[in-house]
Amino acid sequence: MSHTGSPDPAGATAPDHSGDAGHVRRTVTAPYSPEDWRLLVRLPGRVIVAVSSGPDDPVRAVTEGLAGLDGIAAGRAHDSDLVRAVVAAIYAESDVGHTAPFPPHHTDGGAPELLHSCRAAVQILARHADPADSAAYRQWVQSVAARVCRAAGPGGRPRRLGEPVEADRQAFLDRLGEALGL
Image (cartoon, rainbow, N blue to C red):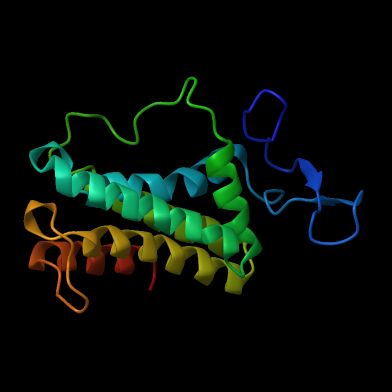
């Protein structure tokens, strides 16, 4: 991350805190163009927005949003270097100059565009990522969506363990998994 708070450009170097202090390694962002990296970094947040209930049920939307953020944060401890790098980039992004995940006039949460972006991410990962990192990233994005869907029932009440999600949410999770190649 730069000293201004903006994310490092693709291919930037960063200190390696996993081994000896002072060593510098090339980050996992190296093979990605800035546009490809931006798509991978912003996709989890777009998933949260697309899956959450929105303004019609604000209590539920907050519960779901927090569950989604928890899902993103869980990526900090992931085995995958790619997932950890994406989470670090998410936390590093500045709000200055960023636009909404999709134009606000969408009534479907931007689902068609989101699914298209998921398919694009799969192609990007196929070109640049180790197969294990690709699978880990795709499964992690799906898990973020699942956390959001399972966070709250109607009215924002906590969902009981094992309580199924609504049919429309399950259908969305299925379409998302398909778009992610899972």
